[in-house]
Image (cartoon, rainbow, N blue to C red):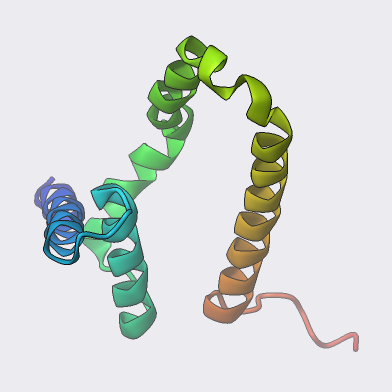
Length: 121
């Protein structure tokens, strides 16, 4: 239980650091995105997440759809403002999906050890 609390405090600390960076440098990013970038950089430097961070993030992955819902609902109610920009939004969604999938695959190949049996090669 204490490791989960440590993990949530770590996640909150990176969110706070992201907010500090965004406000200090007047960046056009949300503090959550800046915090995730800082967390990703830290994880790349450390090469492995701590037990607390893993314990805290596993339940959040299961609720990922619920975490995305507020943004989707916001766009639904403001659809009139995006009337002439649907092709741009569609291209951005496709490009973002492909880029995030490629980045995830690249990171997994780089950071997760290969467990396949190489004896038959």
